[in-house]
Image (cartoon, rainbow, N blue to C red; front, side):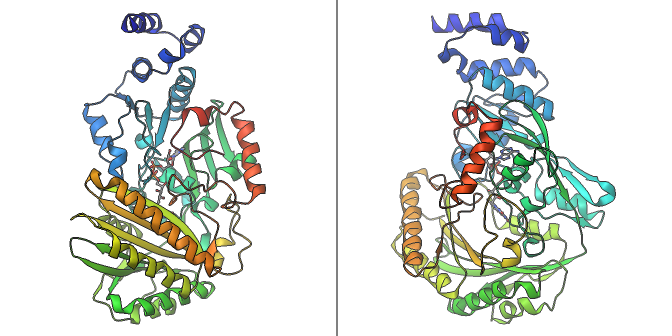
Length: 500
Ligand SMILES: Cc1cc2nc3c(=O)[nH]c(=O)nc-3n(C[C@H](O)[C@H](O)[C@H](O)COP(=O)(O)OP(=O)(O)OC[C@H]3O[C@@H](n4cnc5c(N)ncnc54)[C@H](O)[C@@H]3O)c2cc1C
């Protein structure tokens, strides 16, 4: 009976204009039926833009997520728009048919359901991958589905770069909309601080150009809020003129962590003396090798091999080095190679005051976690510590409200990688326990900061709420949301993301 009714509904709608779709009275269970919604979408986009389960474009895209939990989420179909009008039409359709959906650019969120959706529609922006140099090389338009390695390769041909991701296969969309921590952060701030213009399809189904002089409220709100305000279809950024950079990874023995932390702290404190130099430190447990690894990735964007700012890190005895002059794109590819797809993952973030004491608290809790966790044979835990320097924080206008900081912060992230879904619960619990230990121990020493970086936050963290952002910023975001999404439809139909 149900099927007959659905077929009747299909028959009445095939070839219909959206004006007609609106006139049809459908019960809620029909209109939210994803197969029906996908079928209709495929009628409006007959040219290989709506992909159904088992088709090669569907399975290829499903396997390209960073976390394999997202790969196993099964949307009723994946829709690949070719331009902003396609996105507008699709959003209109999804809202009218009350269909839940997700938005994917590079698929590098570690959060289950952030960019894929079970039994809904995934708007897959991978074909919106333009890299269009504009304004005589001073700016570039980027599609949200472009990957940083492709962008750097294209810009390098003209001696240009852009303040973008450090890892090649990350997508533009989530990275820029969530903030964006680039190798140019000391010079230019967050990547989102640099954005000159966005093109967006809002929940009110409007296509808007958003800049410092047009839709200014959204221009601020889009800087750090990921997908809370609509589907962003183009982003314009200023370019950077660049030659070769100097960078690479140094691998240290465990016994040198004290020196490594001291060197990282010195780099954080002296950022103003050399805005071109930056580094992050990672340590991790690799069950396959049954040992801890400690490394630093160093970068001088001016290509200076003898940067005094990096000398402390390079002078610590190390067991391996890939330091060299190279292009930014080569560096992004190098880091990509050490970040393979295909693992199950869980990740979280915290922020601390940048001090050596904070680094040791973080490291000690990590050691306790690795000692007490029964890792599977392929599994890993990685921790990364990245100084957020004052020149970085004091730039730009974004939703983070970190401009008043008086000393550098330390951005922390931890991620478990594993293969067997039987371990899901264990690693989720281990991640929570490590989070709680860091939080409590940093708090006890007065070193915990309340801000949460959206691009690293776990789905159970709340980056757009107090205390991560102050009450005033939260209220301002809500008022922008009320203006552009008065019926709060995004919250109802895009379930996998944080809303404001
Ligand atoms: C290996 C690796 C390296 C990383 N390196 C860095 C780094 O150097 N610096 C840094 O700051 N971060 C880094 N990150 C974090 C990364 O920036 C975030 O995970 C980012 O959100 C990924 O963007 P994406 O488009 O690839 O992912 P997606 O999973 O496609 O998107 C992430 C979120 O943004 C939303 N979204 C994406 N595009 C749009 C759009 N166009 N309109 C509306 N909403 C959208 C999605 O719905 C989703 O909720 C890294 C992550 C990984 C896994």
